[in-house]
Length: 107
Image 1 (cartoon, helix red, strand yellow):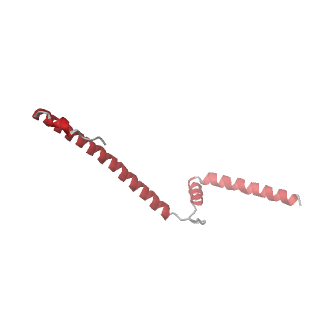
Image 2 (cartoon, helix red, strand yellow):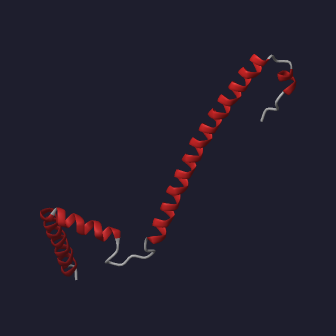
Image 3 (cartoon, one colour):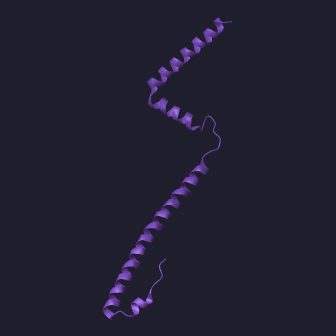
């Protein structure tokens, strides 16, 4: 922070003092506006971080078949793409059968 040289102002005329006062008030208003903007940004960040923390605390720590995000995505995909889901299931069953048959043949 700069120190103020009051001696400089003691030798000024009234007109110069008024001008210096106006400049100081403009500078003060500018600083206030900048500080207000920065404070607003920090408040917004704090609010966002709190909401993120709160939402992460509400998530289950362990998943079962009913609340697993992966299972939910698969179920959603199956509902949206029923034909592809049937095809994928058929291919999977075919691969499982061929794998089972290969293992039974090797015995």
